[in-house]
Image (tube, rainbow, N blue to C red; front, top):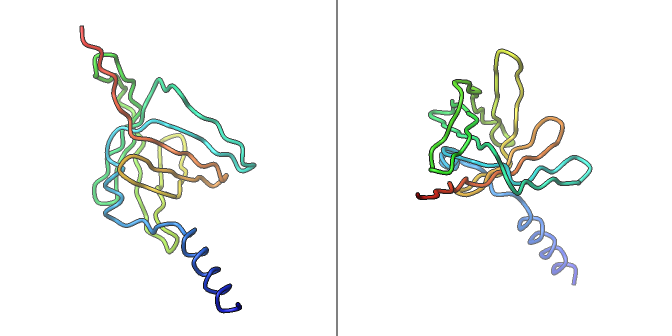
Length: 140
């Protein structure tokens, strides 16, 4: 019975471990994203059913920028010239996005990234979950 319990424990631990993010996974960050859910350190969550702005992310060689975009009903976007520049650093725990603007600097740990979702966690242990933005195009 003891070997079975040990095997079961190993299977549970390996099954619950997160998939390691690779450099190739980071290419999924390129594109338009909308916030889906925010999870706070106390476990409470806030869901975003409607977003008036989306984030456009573009990375190349572990450097990139994030820009706020405002979708229009015709499938286009309006935006300002402001963008948040960032660099991505690989650590033993994964990848961290380091942002620096004229007003502030901060970092976010990339928790998960796939073609249609990604999540990051900041130093305050707030987790932001994003989903791929699908534009609404209302034709005349």
